[in-house]
Length: 358
View (cartoon, rainbow, N blue to C red):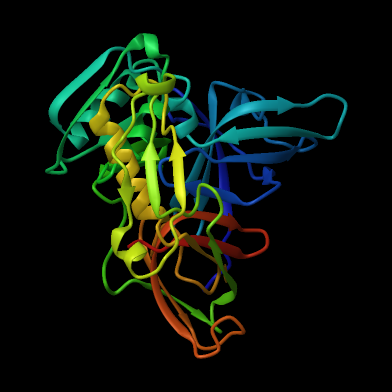
């Protein structure tokens, strides 16, 4: 397959319209995305011979950089410009963050939901960002699951904080902000997608093989604080006996089989006053932590691997087939979800970060 080459565009943050092609723009690290959270990236832009409107196309706070795979014409990454350093040096240094960061600079106001569909909750919380913001398009069909949620303007919780809180509940919906071409290819739109689970979780997942398109892989297993626990309690704000506390959630079957008790207490978010929300956070944390964190980091040759943005994306199931390795001498077939990815187009490397789900 053809090497992965990216075209870069500097665009207006409010409209998504292209201001200037930026062929000289070079990321100094790997592009990355993470489900329901912000990622950042630094850039170097040589100024001699730079595009005529490079200055207008990279203004911090009002522009956004978009990368497009030139082979598939697929937009795969977008980041709002937040910093720019330039002077007597021969290049400008830029810093950008994915649009989840924009939601951390907007607030939902007073919001109260009672037995509302999860998609309606996310939509209601995110809607204030549509006024005076980027061309975010909410794509949130009903999930079929209802929930209660409340936040007050005085809590000073950003939209991002609220969305992460909702996603962190047991059975909570997932969300992400993608980038697509706008009609006519004159700019871009940014769908905020909400689903019970983002991506495709088909049994016939996209195939990565070692040896093959995978250059290397690593399985990281951890029972460190915050990553492993067989007993979880979530706590609200306050002190002593007046502090709101969830029920105690135990991995009963695991403990009965002889697993030690590892206790974990934490405060999932500020301003939680609903014990049901605390219980939901504790239940979700136990589900993720009972047997510890297990993360597969796969480094594949981008030009040989299934194509990012066309064959697979964030949230999708990925099948890793290892014929043999020092860690798995008998080989292993594993299907896990892509919770994040990194792309280093210059080095022809793509790195899906896979998490096993119970």
